[in-house]
Amino acid sequence: MQTSDIDTEKQPLLGSQSNHHVNDISINGLHTNTSRSTAEISENGSSKTSDAEEFSFRSLGKRKKIIFVIIGMGNFCAFTCFSLLAPFFPGEAAKKGVSTTVVGLIFSCFQLWIFITSPIFGYFLTTLGAKFVFVSGIMVCGSCSLLYGILDKCPPDEIFIAMCFLCRTVEALGCSAYLTASAAIIAREFPHHVTTVFGTLETFTGIGLMVGPPIGGALYEAGGYGLPFWTMGAILLTCGIVSFIFMPGQDEGTRVFKGSVLRLVKSPLAVISCLTVFCGSFSLGFLDPTLANHLKVFNLSTLYVGLIFLCAPGVYGIIAPLLGYLSDARSWTGGMMMIGLFFSGISFLLLGPAPFLPFLPFKLWLTIVMLCFVGLFIGCCLIPTFTGILIGAKQLGLDEFLDTFGMVSGLFNIMFIFQTVRFR
Image (cartoon, rainbow, N blue to C red; front, side, top):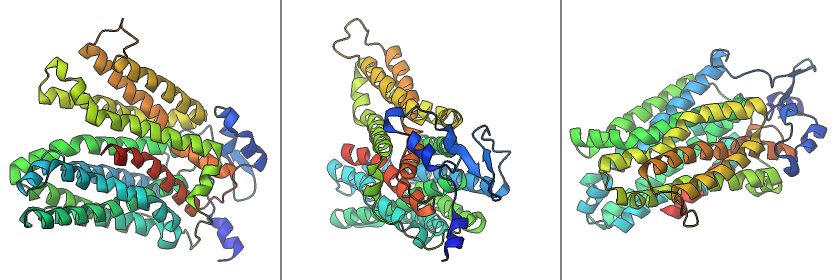
């Protein structure tokens, strides 16, 4: 590919900016004025400031609207499918002679393979093609869901366990491809509103994770083991076909990222963003194995315990679009992360409450309120981090190509998924 062709493919990484402006964004000034990074260079060489432009779905062009809707639809369907087996699969596995420990390993291998393969898909994203990786990931997830629906026909013990691990592993590869490609496409197509779009699409993800278990339980009661998997698998395959037909191509060429994902961690801002991703996702994952025991003293029914579990992720999903908008509109990436980290820590201290706060009562209302605050401030931690890593990549002088976006996406997925491997 000629140099002139490559230059026309460049998309602004949070807006084109001069080297002088890049150097102004330092680790000592995470909350400094990064709005200068949104100065966009038009085709005729004149510059225009886009930081005043607010994100609006109605103002988007047809291409961007299609991409937004397809990724949102994919997020909802995919994460509904990933979470629907939680209410009934452990019981079905027990009938096949599978221990609780092995069931936990079957669940955790999903996150482990995403952790391993995310940077690989990011590295080869431009070689394989962003649209191809995106569509293939959804199709693989849908196909594996259909296969999951017939695992109850397998012989018990070793054969059943092996098939579960195999299906879960292949499904994880599809999920890894889909997540990596979708985040890179967002960064390329919405360069001035990355955090807003990312936060809005996180709402679809959160809703999918919340409604997946009840949908899975209802379909299981209605039609047995296979119906939940066959239903969601068919929906995912339909999403894949729709994406293949309607999603625009990316014209990414055949460039491959020069270096490794470790190059990105040379930026202090990228390192802090990665640590923030880990801390935020770790905090949400911390609630899964501990909150139910914490609530035993209140003698609540399983229904109410389940509703309380929805407090933190529910608030996170609802508030994510607003947090994304504030981060983009105010160019306050570092400041929002610091506020989120500090106040989420305070919220966890009050959630206990901590032993050195004896004046606080251990009451149900306080627990619910603090869980809502945890969801709010964890959102402040997580939503701006993708943009923070992108700014770090720009500080390192990385080219504004899809391969860079792919590696940023892979690094983000590594840090986000690491806590789930730890807790399983």
